[in-house]
Image (cartoon, rainbow, N blue to C red; front, top):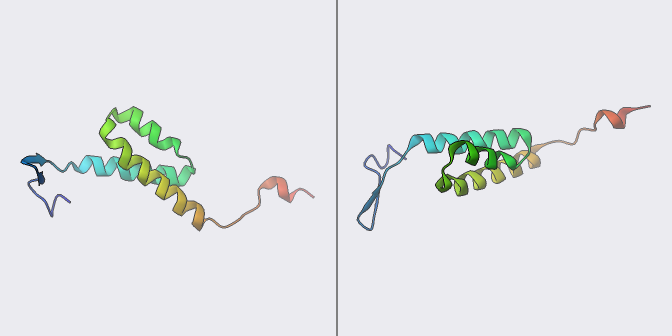
Length: 84
C-alpha cells in the first residue's frame, strides 16, 4: 500500500497516512488466531494496542483466518478416541 500511495490516501481534502505497523499487527493477529483457532486473539490485540480504529480490520482478519484454518484442517481423532 505504501508503494502504491507514498503520500497516503487523499479523500475530502484529508490525507490519511499509510502505517505499515498497522498491517503487521493485523497479520500477526490473523496468524495467531488461525493457529489457536480462537477469536479472542482479536480482543488481546485490541487490549495490547489500545487503538479502537484497528479493531474492525483485526476482527475481520482473525475471523477469516480462523475459518480458512478450520476448513483446511483434516479430522484427526483425539487421544481419548484411541483408548482400547
